[in-house]
Length: 169
Image (cartoon, rainbow, N blue to C red; front, side, top):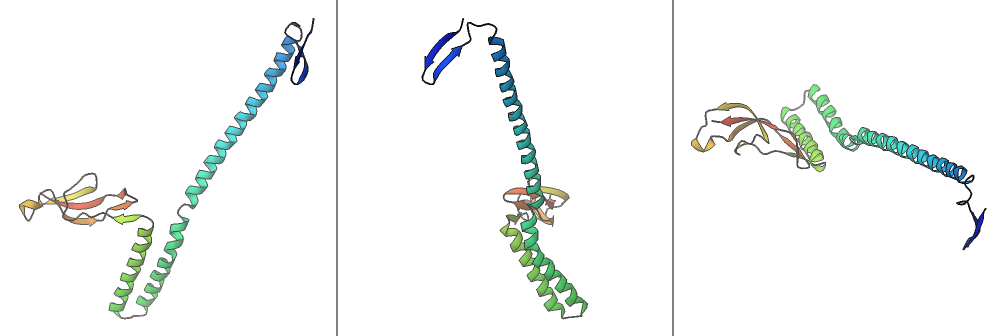
């Protein structure tokens, strides 16, 4: 026996009392839900693949801005090399190299690179790599960085290279 029910949308047939209809409806509903699930799963997998691809593309092109900014410095070094080959004045050549170094330093500083101050500060293994120890010239120089062999650098407050230093003992 099929019961009729009135609701806002109109008249629906209730199948609760008809056992032969119920398994078919349940199977149909199951198939629909399974299809929705599989489509959502596939969409999510495609999203993950797209996100990974986008991240890889970003990593490949992330340095493009910095490298483009460094091209004029490379051009300046080319010109300096040509000038040195023509036997120019040593003082003007040295001044030109100084300007190129300053230009390079400014470009790198604009992108967040900064030098680590090491000479005269207490040795810190978090910041410094001790290359060697020498006798301290004064008592207050014990455990202090006496010389910097290789500068350390920060990139936006993150250490990207530790300073290689000589420590007084």
